[in-house]
Length: 207
Image (cartoon, rainbow, N blue to C red; front, side):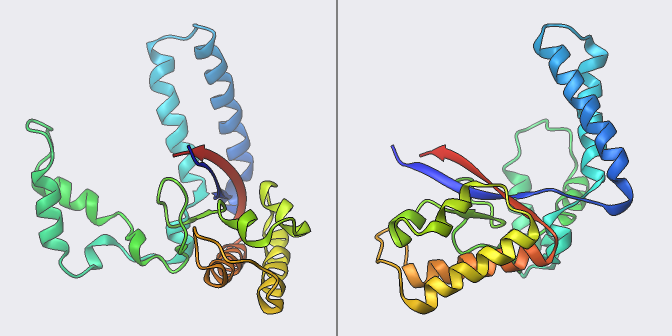
């Protein structure tokens, strides 16, 4: 089984919501601990999704920050939404018009300007698959930093290190990726998202 490592974006908090985010995050943590210990009520279970929704409203989404287009701007959108609606289970309680409106508000990940050429395990374009890196650069000192949570300035600094590795040709071929293209994509990913004030954190998984 192949162990995978990827970068995921660290949520960016809206500048006027920082105190609110801290209060909501603390409330979520306390409620999670209460439920984990077998406490809480039906009201507690209803409270958790509400808190998560409030938290999401305090964050800048990657879709918003990147300017990713909406799905209804894509050619052939009408045919796609009709097909997707037809795949819903019978009696789902949603009309076609409601479904179309809900889908039209979603962003088109396939055309995200910040999309990675090497998405992680979940296939999300604003993640980056780090699995081939060790095979490509070996024991290069900067490669150890990918496991750390990186702030935007640290990401920009790391992008420079990746680019110097690329320009110097100090990398090896790899069966998982075109090494030169991979490093160029890594540097571009770091620069794009650091410029939009997102950090990255490493996450692991298996496939």
